[in-house]
Length: 391
Image (tube, rainbow, N blue to C red):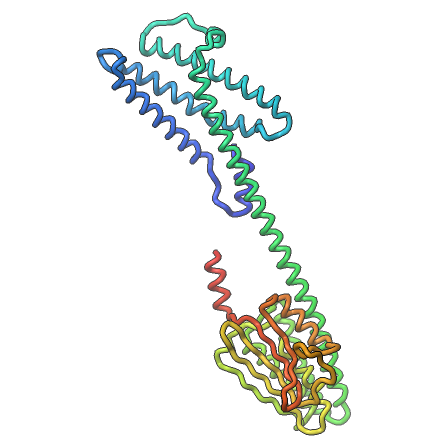
């Protein structure tokens, strides 16, 4: 009777309204009606002087027991031939015929059992007499009451089915949206990896003749970086500590390239080391600072990496002492033309955090360029807590 509803509910993980629960409620309802009827007959002053007879009790239990058996069938009938569907006039006529037939049948059975159990005599009474004599009106009223309850139940079941299907569709849409976002983030990351690799190989080639020993060290560091990126392919977020460890391997390559002309200063608040950040978010920023800042000056280049927490946000900045930007807009210091690293970093931040993130370029009064990243502060334990509470 509830197969479609149960199937839909099981797909969405919701608790179903099981048939045995409904059957139990139907039995409880008709048992209560039978008990009230027996009680009324027992105290009815118009009843027999010797009190309520056993036959009357048995006849009452049989009468309402039959209604308890027929109620699920009536519910199934209204579910199978609902009035809201096409050809509702034909279906209404079908329900009218069903109502009269069941009411006449119950009147016939009720009269037969009454004479057999209470009067202990036979009666010449047929189903046709019940139909023609219109003696079934009381039973018809009961049937219509059950039918009304069945219509209300059917509307409720169909409403639950629509709600379950809508929830399932929302879940599928959210899953597809997440998969699309994951694919977009992975595509952005796949653009960053070759860009980083080509730039590093170019740095290696520039040192082949003048520093073979340094080249060997750079190749070792490069292999470590590639191994790290391959192992972390499926992760969009890592801890800031892991990101700094990866960045240190990259800076080892750049230190070999620049010899003693590269200075790196860190100012990392300890509480930020467990914060989650996008994987490979710092390397493009540092690479941009070296390419457009440090490499364009004659004196020692200085890269400052800082991280701190303010409220519910994590702030990470990468600064250099280079010549700064030749052209910026007045609103947020946006670069006129961003390279692959900055552009993909901006896109990844937007895909991961929406409007809760910010990537801003600033030109300090002391010169150089500062890239400031702001993202929501969260850790792996925060994610675990959120998943546990949702479950």
